[in-house]
Image 1: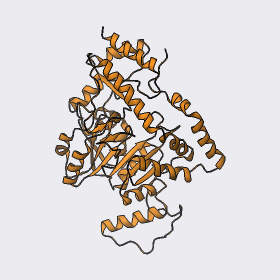
Image 2: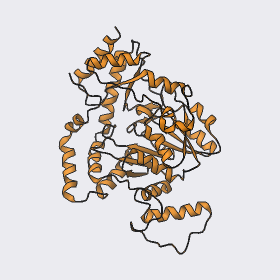
Image 3: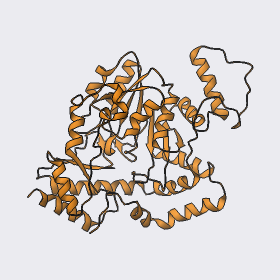
Image 4: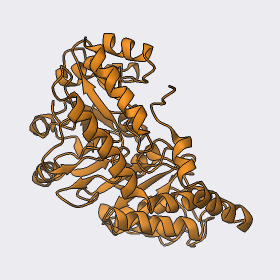
Length: 392
């Protein structure tokens, strides 16, 4: 049988009528940029994740860039993060002129090892950028405590964790700001690119709203005045002042969520709990079937209700295992084969193999299985059969 690692077409088919009606409504309206659909989705997604403010943008990478810029992070600053993540996490730090400082991850949760954070703090450190990896939440209470102690910002990369619960709640504003991706394969995926910044802080929200549209308008003016105030500098009295898009106060970006994406995402959001439960069900059945084998199944932290964007196993001979299960028609791969601290783009930072042993081991011994909620029972059963037989 033909099985896909992720199958966005199948997800669309389940509620196709809803999604296509929403898209057609936007197409007929002529309002393709911003508008009521975008505003409604920002409000609804923020409410779903327990935040006061939602600021949509073009993609998850932009969400991190906007968040860092809104916090005033830039050239000369350092941001502590992990190397076990997608490139965009650290790329965003570099994009604002700051330097990523990589630390290792916890061997059970694959999220930032909170015990390593304080040793990485220097006088240039301005923030900690945690990653809720594979749908597992970081230990946010510990990270908040460390950041408060050292007067650091806490940013969460939630690109893989929409719908994840932390201590019984969907609360993705436990840091100063959280960043989401709506790439089609994600827990909440659009029919194209999209991203969102969530925060409980009005100053961050207003800065992000302005930065995503060329630093313009009412929010741009407010943010610039706020920056002058923070620096203790009098606001110039000879500056052109206006609230339209033609008055630019910050060097920003063009990063907007299309109305058609917002409309589709609004419909998908109504089914979000169903999507997450489907992923959790598939993961639970994998765990039960493979628990007595040589495979190391995922560990779910006691404080977290994992949303399983990715279902990842470990095995010391992962490359051999992947080769055999691919031959049997089961798609797989490693997320991610080259850790960020060893990527060519960060060679100038001087990291070498052996610096982050847990991360490097994961890049060699971990691999993934299909876990998307629309996976058919017979497909999942076949995958389990293949996984058990491959060890023979």
